[in-house]
Length: 265
Ligand SMILES: [Zn+2]
Image 1 (spheres, rainbow, N blue to C red):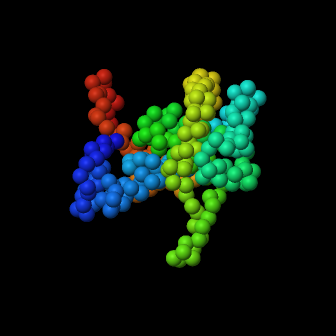
Image 2 (image 1 turned 30 degrees about the vertical axis):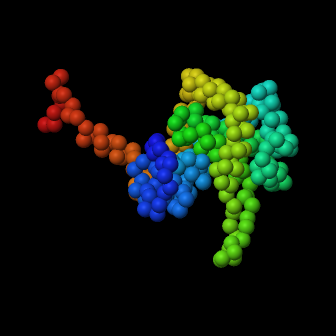
Image 3 (image 1 turned 90 degrees about the vertical axis):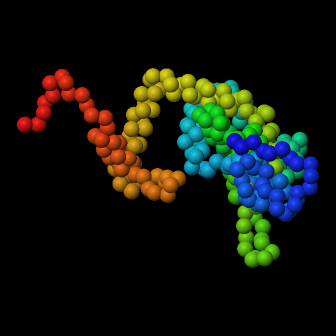
C-alpha cells in the first residue's frame, strides 16, 4: 500500500500532482488526488481500495450457504439470524441513507439468511487472505455494499442522455452499514470461519471435500471449453493447465540416472 504524501499546507495550483506516491497525474481542482484516485476513494473508501467481484466471493458464499443450512439449529446461527432480522426491521440508529437501503431490501423480502451469507462471503475472504483489504474503511465498504446489492439498486434517469441507471452507494454510505455489521456481527463471522476451516482441516471432512473437488475438476476438464479468464488477457483451460504442468515436468531438471538407468536400446 502506498503511503500518502504529507498534505501540504500551501494552496495547490493547477500543476500539482496527485498525492498518491508514484502517481504523476495532475490533481483535480481543490483535490489532493487525480481523477482516477479520487474516484477510487469515492467508490472504495481508499485511494488504493478495491471492491471485490462477485466471482471472487462466490466460493466463500457457497461454503457459507452450505454450513449455515447444516447448522441452522445451532444457537449461534439462530442468534445471528435474529440479529439480521433486527438489522432489517429496527435500524433507526443508522444514518438515513443506510436506512433507505435497508427498507428497499425489506420491501424486496430479503431473508436474514441471505444477509448472513453475504456478510460471511466477505469474512471468508479475510479469513483466507488477511490483507484482502487495504483498510478497515474499504473492508466496511465491501461489507455494506455486498448487502446493499442483494437486490436491484435504486435507479435514476440521467438528465443528459435520458437513460436509466443504477445508483451505486458511495463508500461513505456503504461503509456506514459495514461498520455496524463489523461491530455487531464481525466476531460471530470470524469465529464462524475459524470453526468451518478447522472442520475442513479435519481428515474425515477433508477426504470428502477432496473427492468433491476432484469430481468438480474432472467435470470441468471434460467440458473442454471451461475457461478461466486470466489477468493478462489470454485464456487458460483446466485441461490446458494440466498439459502445461506435464510439459513443465518433462522440461524440468535432468534426472540423475546413476542407479543403472533403463536407457533406450
Ligand atoms: Zn493519482
